[in-house]
Image (cartoon, rainbow, N blue to C red):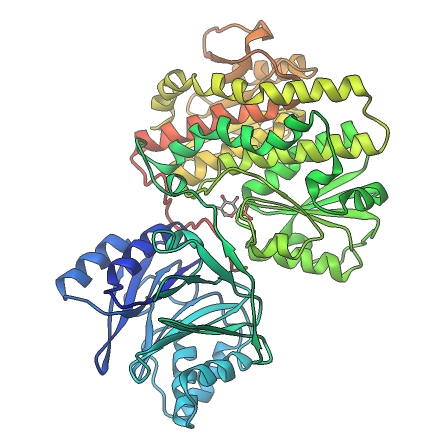
Length: 609
Ligand code: G6P
């Protein structure tokens, strides 16, 4: 949730920290701060609001140093105040933290009894005091951190500096991502590689329970038993272009427009091979996929809606039973597990805590067959899964997920088709037909993107509204859900989605001239049913905004506005129909003047429950 960056170099690292925090801002943007070791002192600057505000303050106070740490926060314990912003300091020890410490109350009592006073309401301040307490017992900073993490329960990524040890920073990881960046005569720590990519692409991903010492010319990593370990070095291929806005106004707009490319990249292997091969899902996938008798999908947010679309595909194409569940629900209920079912987690970031915990729970129930659909290589969820399919959307920065969603759908479609092939339910002709449809998909998505001016004109009418209703049926019902989610999260208009057939069981009572009703109405077998549902809305004075296909033969009339997406693309239609609802949300948010990429109260990467 929060973003961490740290650096030690021969040069002034303040610009590195600030630049890194700006790149990490998508992880949380309530407040930001840096601490640097300056001579015999630790200096800190913190501000509520965006990194840019803190940057101004740091410049004003002349911050310079070759060792420092920084943090951008998404508040959990304690409100959005400067006192709660990181870094937290205890007697010359400064610390930044991502995660939640569950036993902080107990540790707070212990520290109070030892004479420590608290300035903030955070769980993090406890860790700073604990480190200082251990330093007082004669340990060095690394040993102190290694002792303290054994006293913590919960999740953390930590980076720590001390005025007494100006030649290194130390860090630790459990349950939250943290990597070490390897430079020439300078080294870094960061929550993700985007923060340090301008300095280095060589990274070591810390494992659960690891601690590390990061000096200018040396990095030492220790496992959970404090034994020195070698962790593999990776070279990140994250493109700088994916982290920069370019000619776009917002990352969300850029990412919406990147979808033809993102889909093309994600589908490249299957289109080149002209067939659905189990190896798409990693080594040994054929063995695993051949054995599975059903699918259990677990995910949160937009990724959950991708799973909800996949259920329709998996059951209808592969004939396997499929259930989809919100990860935070699954992990806390008594589940009757069938170990012959494949557990599929879907996560853009690969670090959503509830999804990770749901996966661990599923494994504890005997699920050995696990597959992660993920957009971030080497992140925690794919690393905990037997099989992996990486979507190749590129870095997604806008908090509202767009290209990650459509590429997840592409990956899930490949799964449905691959399972069908293994089950003998996909003959060569059908396979060739699906491959052909996938080949045309980026083009169809581009056609849908070309509707932007028309959709923007609708957005003007949505902007003054308080509420909106989205309707869909069948495999397009989850697209209605995704459309409502997009609209509410970035424009703050209250939006709900319903299966159109359910309208008369409640939501019809809300329909009046002030409630725009968006309908996803492609030319599929349910179009006639959806038309009847639209009549129910019109009869109550509701205004309809309908997305339908070129070939649906569905016209405008009073109170019925229609935008035609490209010719019906068959089974891949939900992917194409996602584009207009993304654009509608984006332009409505623009018209309302909200902060599109950083909607209030939200964060992109949710590493807390
Ligand atoms: C947050 C993001 C959403 C995302 C959800 C799940 O709420 O704002 O865009 O869908 O987390 O994240 P994941 O990374 O697991 O897909």
